[in-house]
Image (tube, rainbow, N blue to C red; front, side, top):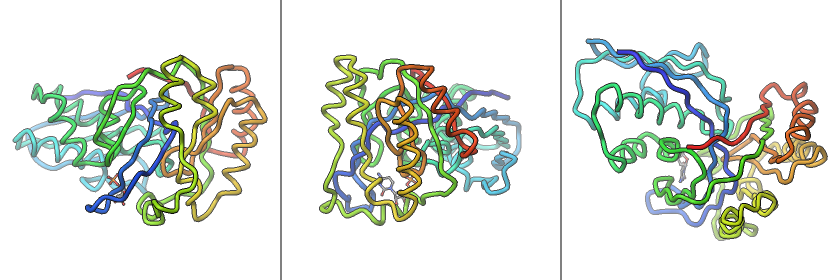
Length: 286
Ligand code: C5P
């Protein structure tokens, strides 16, 4: 049995941290959006046992420590399926540790593909439970599109879709550890927060400028390093006509939102020689 699919990256239009929960995780309020930047995931199952993940990248684990491998193990456990050797090949285009949900989208893709291959017909809440056990951003990646995501990442609500637009996404050449960044959060000290309701109202009115000028990520004020470089990328994006710019997820990638493709192309041209991980992409539906 062999199946393939594309696994799309996500960006955070806004990211707010409401409180710390007793289990150590944080209660989030974030608007996520799928963009047309993707990994290619192929799964092959044959009689035997074990899960292997091939990415061709030496710094990514090649077994169940990889989020795609972990997703396969969680899926088989939840479905009571045994006796299959599983090989997952991932052609990675989404940069890792970038705030673009690359690992999470691969994990969600594996769950969807295995559900199809084994005809397991899990209902959506069962798939969400499996996804949630793999990682906080994995449930969103099962659906994609434009969603309000709350709690640890498991509460997903439909909101009006972001009108079609372009994003220039640029990852500076350093990484942010998500657990380290969450460890630095002191909820009572967060002074500026995104206007999430204002963004949702703008989406209801199809007002993309209203969305763009409200984009905000509380992690930007907590970053232990790299703020100067992030500010410089933002300036380049805004100087080239972005209607708004924000860091995505736990960073360090920065995005600029454009409705004008020509302006997006010129911002991309300005940044692409300095930054190896620079992309011109656009919205894609769920
Ligand atoms: O769930 P996931 O493995 O993606 O989370 C990585 C780390 O991010 C967790 O260990 C935790 O430190 C932090 N986290 C959090 N609150 C969330 C999501 C993640 O504190 N809602």
